[in-house]
Each structure stands twice: as structure tokens, then as C-alpha cells.
Length: 329
Ligand code: SF4
Image (tube, rainbow, N blue to C red; front, top):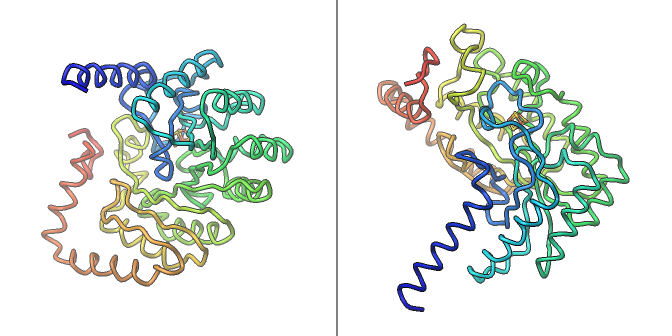
């Protein structure tokens, strides 16, 4: 291939990617466990869109793409895969919570994927607990048979107080029931949990209730993230009014340590998300002691309070909001 061919191919790849993902604007979210899948846009934004801590979709109205639009996306993604000589057979439906789509539409999407791609190992997507609970047991089994697997649930917390304060719109019981329903349908799932979500007042409750909830469930992976004050999040108002007292990154590291220590399930602990103060990943229970030791080393090394203050301020500034006032920097 000469230089001109390479440039043309690069341009074609860029144009195709813009055609498929341009509708998402700046924000485009993929579950960490599914970063290397073929990502098919099916919805834009989130159908709920009310969580206080979230501004992922603040500028976008929820929209379901039509089956025609989805088919066009799949055709372009097929071309992209061929250009990249990529035989990936794992798929992700992109959007805030595509599992909100009705069962028939999800089945139609699975058929389209199989029409254009030679094989399909599984189809994953983000799901809220109530998206799962609205589906019947029979629907979940049919979806599993069609390829839906490795869903990603944004649990965030196991504490009703935290979930209510953050206006998550589901309860601890909903989270637990959703995971049980997936277990019964033999659908695997990963889960997001968020350190610092209870603030200073509810930290102990958040740790205790989240770990006890997780100990009753069977996620294959926990994606551990730390609360960040995004510029468009409604939580900023609660920080300004002191109704929500943020935890420092150092405190959230200790919170994560407690949560990890309380877990007694087989799961991958994945805290490598860039919001976390210290990235660690390992398998529980095998690596639990090692992970705890590593976190303890960091906690001890950060015990010089002057350095810590500078370090934390720098981290918060990365996310554009003053830690004390909640004002934009
Ligand atoms: S956290 Fe998830 S469910 Fe809540 S508004 Fe954001 S995308 Fe929607």
C-alpha cells in the first residue's frame, strides 16, 4: 500500500467513525469490561437522566434510534472491521441504558448483528436495575438465547439512603432483585460501584450496605469508580449548600479499602478507572490480601498531610471543580 492509499484508508476510517459515533458528541461511554467490543449505537443519552452525580447526558435528550438507523450503523461497523482486519465477535449496544429497549427491538437488533457479522459471542450493554426488572423471566431467557450476556449494571451503592439522596431512582432491593433475575436467566453481569457517593456523612453506611449487597450477588467484575463533580451535575448545588460534604480522594481510597476488605465473593475487582486515586485490579479472593497491602502502602505513603493537600487539589482541578466551594475552576 503506498502513502496515498494509507492516507485514503485513514480518512475513510475517520469518516466512518464520525458517521457512526458523531451523534454522541463529546461523551461516549463504554463499560470498562467491554472496551474492546464492536460498539453499535442504538440509543442516545439515558432514559432516566436524573441521578444527581451524573452529567453524562445533560446536553442530550434520550432518543431510540430506529431499526433502519441501527442497521446502517451495523453496515458501517462491518466495513470498519473489514478495513481493520478485525474479527471481533463481541458486541456492545452503545448508549446510557440500551436495555431499556423493549424485548422485540433488542431481538431485532440481535438478528441484524448476526445478518452482517459471521459470528456473535455475546451482546452486552449498560442496564439500570429497573430496565431488567421490567422484563419478564421469559423475556430474559429469550434475550440470553439471542446472545445478550455480560450486561453492565450501574449499581453505584447498596445503601438506600445514598441511592435516595443521589436520586438514583432504584432501591437496594431493586439492585439485588435485578441481579438475582439475571442469575436465574444465566445472564452474566458486571457492576459499577462509586466510592465517595455517600459523602462524609454516609460513608460508613455506603461501605457497609454496598459490601453486604455485593456479598449476596454474583457479578463477574466490579468496576470501581470514584465520585467526580462533573460541571453539569446537579450535585454541585448540594456541595455549595453543604448538604453534601465531599470526601477527599485520600478518604475515598480508604473507603475503597474497607469495601474491598468486606467482600467475600469471587469477582474481579477492577479499580483502574482514571477517577480513582490509585489504580488496582485483581481477582478475589486470590489477590485480596495483595490488593489490600498495595492500597495500605499508598495510604501510608500519603500520610504527609502537606503533600497530600497539594496532590488532592491537583486531582480535583483535573476535573474542573473547586473542592471546597463546588465552583468551576
Ligand atoms: S448515572 Fe446512569 S442511570 Fe443515572 S442518569 Fe447517568 S446514565 Fe442515567
